[in-house]
Length: 146
Image 1 (cartoon, one colour):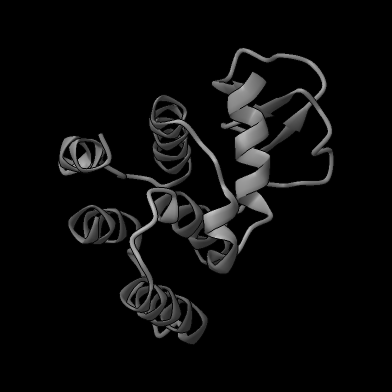
Image 2 (image 1 turned 180 degrees about the horizontal axis):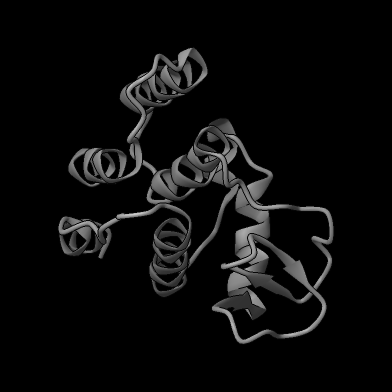
């Protein structure tokens, strides 16, 4: 998991200025990960929370809507031509948006759903970060949580 997260961070953080809030989030997250049993959903919560510091955290204003538009970064009542999250995956996505690391043990997400969620989160990063590359370590991460 560390390789995957390191690769995601390397592909995401392009700032050369000091960012104390981002640093504090990363430090807290990795210390938490070191001190707790590995949870197969950690990376999902970590990445979604990371978007707060990168400037594209999902707009949760209409979070009861049946679609999440990945391009627009918000919930929608109607399907659009943009990539969407919907159905059961959307239910898990909404849960991930409102959870902290200490509540990870309460999440019950099947591995196929976790993979789909991760695929959507990575696409969300690609849509919002210029030059973002899909991580090569993704296959390794998927194998670890088989």
